[in-house]
Length: 182
Image 1 (tube, one colour):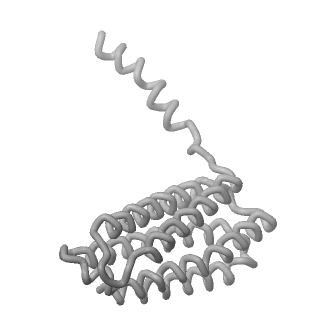
Image 2 (image 1 turned 60 degrees about the vertical axis):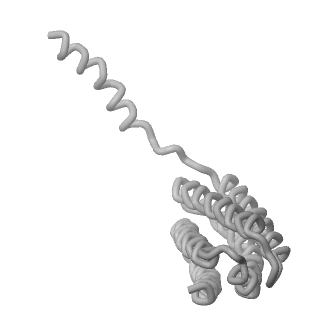
């Protein structure tokens, strides 16, 4: 009898948690996430630009890894928030598209700068750094693609082609960077 009573006490909690809706996010949160991603891209690019093409040190290389990890985290959060947002209105879709269009050249420049600094990573006296860079690039490429897919899924139909073009351009830049470090 005691076991049945205990089980009955737990049932409302189980059904209550199943009945509660997923935590919804707002377009404002997605816009804030994109601003955060932009800040992280800038931090990563600054660290890459400061890294020399020869004579660098492991501490600075690991700082770049940390910046890449922070960026990946920001992108993952933005993906989750976007997935938990209702479909974008036309105005919201335009605003988000404009933010991503402004971010696109910064992402591409950062990846180009990373390619240009490859000799600095290969000249470090510790092996495996270029492998770490390649792993970071793979993670960022996958995370960025997932974020783009989430944004595209929420976008108004008339903005999807533009969004797909941006995704394609960024994917191509990641492919070039990954190839450089493979």
